[in-house]
Amino acid sequence: MNKTILGLFIFNCCYMAATGFVLPILPLYVLEFGVDVITMGPLWTAISLIGLIMAPLWGSVSDKYGRRLFHVIGGALTLSFICVLYALAVNLQQIIILTVLWAALGSSQSFPIFMTIVSELTGTEEQGRVMGFFWMGGSIGWSFSVSLSGAIIEKFGIRECFFPPAILYLLSAVLSKVMIDEHSGKVKRRRVDFMEAMKSSKWCNLNFIIFWLATICFFISETVKNSYILVFFKQELGLDDALATFLFSLTGWVEIPILPFFGFLSDRIGRKLVILLGLFSSFLFNISVSLLQDLAQVILIVIPLSGISWSAFASASSALIGNLVEESHRAKAMSLYNSSRSIASVIAPSIMSIAILKTNFRIAFQFCALIPFAGFLLILVRFKLSKK
Image 1 (cartoon, one colour):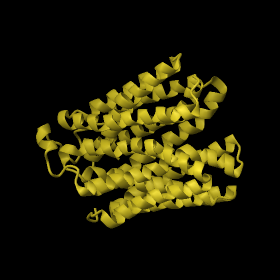
Image 2 (tube, one colour; image 1 turned 45 degrees about the vertical axis):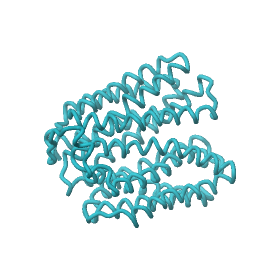
Image 3 (cartoon, one colour; image 1 turned 90 degrees about the vertical axis):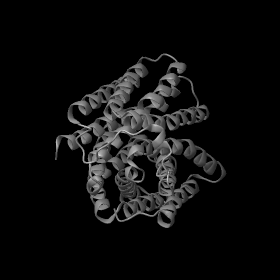
Image 4 (cartoon, helix red, strand yellow; image 1 turned 60 degrees about the vertical axis):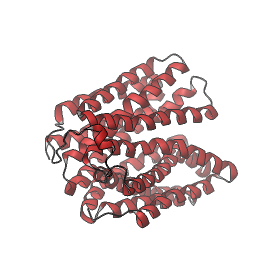
């Protein structure tokens, strides 16, 4: 293992650990400033739209001017500074401004472009393994911070929970500078005229559009899982907060050993088959949740399906996306891939809210299962790709 690949792993571990501290507690922090749950939905929708707009723009800038690592470091440093300001905020207006800056200058700039660097540092034949290893670091960091954030809030308070991610984002920026050489990879980039690249017929081809739509379907399911599964555990199964949170953190720990395996598998049998497995596992996850009756079913069925769906889709899809468009558009394509999360975060709450209002929690999850299944059919029927 060379220093650069190890640097990729450590960066994502620190970066996702920081994100795992911030994202789950940010809604709770906003509630302390008098925002109700009804108002929170439109607020997060607007912020998600900002991230959706900015991510491709940052990708285009990176494609045009190069210096990808510069954008990664700048984004991570921005997030570190914003975390400190979160802890010092005194009113809701400051929180909104900081969250807008978070979406526009931090998360939409740093992580998508870093994934572009990952794709450029490795050859096609090994990208699945490297992406699996990369995402394993993220799962370790996320699981660790989600497990710790509740204890920190209980012992010190919610404001103090923003200082660890500030340190972790700073550390990820320093490590990426020290350990990663973006020019050491097997894929060599060339400078191209931006307008010439924009007019290229190889940009935004049918394969890319189909894949992007399937990715949105998958992330809608993931957003529903991350946003509603704890509430489902409490209301439908009667679990207390501590046990529900513990079970949720287990999904991340399950991903750690199997992410590299699915990355390796996608190198061997092809990205398409592993992506199909991820989408179908997401479909089965939602169906299984809707049929849950006891704790044993959560442990033996739901948690493994959650780990399989994310591990298979994340490792194979992130390895594939950079190969669907020509070299000069790789960062933009990776940014659009990541922006599918923002689209999902806009759509998913509305879908679940309407489904729960019109039916019930269990039927809402059954309806949600149709979304990754639609993505499964899109890839199965319309997506054309060679074995690798």
